[in-house]
Length: 179
Length: 180
Image (cartoon, rainbow over all chains, first blue to last red; front, side):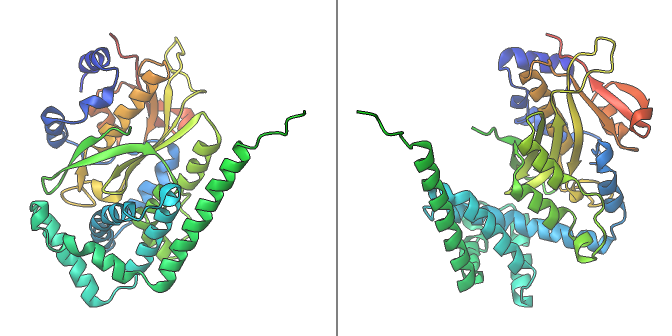
């Protein structure tokens, strides 16, 4: 992406990120000869050394988890948006992600196989209405969460809501008026 | 409103990403997905910096940390300093300095073949130039590339000012002002 193009975009919309969609952009990133290493900054050295020390098996495990969570996390987010959490959404969502990740470390072989099938379905790039396994994710998540998990989420929702209300009270406290 | 950006997966799917301020959940993405084996193996912390950088960005205005989110979690991170750094050119103009930039492990050729997502570095670097424009620095951005990554920054047309003895000999790159 040359400087001329950037200058034209700034003149046009003032926003360089408007260039990051559409056929021309997608073609640019697909055809770029780019091995994916982008790290800059002295503090990134340990991370790069860590990556270079990984075995193929370790990498395979990480990649599989990424694929699984790239399906489960958006479904979790969308499902939770229907819970009516309001200002406590972020706090409850953060905890729900932690709960999900804890469960993903303790699955049965049948559950692991189901998740592998879910990823395989995702690889087929089917229209949404044909993704029968993905349509079952919310039900799976609902069954995965235990009674204690639901109580934890409810407690966090209540605490965060209470904090929000009390903050409103502090902001809106009106000093007494002398008469 | 957060802007949607496009990337392509190795399966040929076009996916939508968003660059958002880094939050606690992004740090947890890094801990859970980018480097879990270190934790499992009880290895000493490899000088991991993102929790510290998250706190810095929340406490000091001159630091900003952003995540490139795709499908609900972080695929790339960038940490910039916006007040104190100056161009290494004689004019010494202010610029955005990239303190750290990185991509998730599976987005590189020698770790996952083919890499899962392409375009992470381009997006984050372009974003840093946009921040530079918004701050009045006209798109000036500086950074020190790690060894063997210089080719990436050369491919983006970023001028190279040679090894910097004050930064362990890492090569310094700097984009100048975007000329209208």
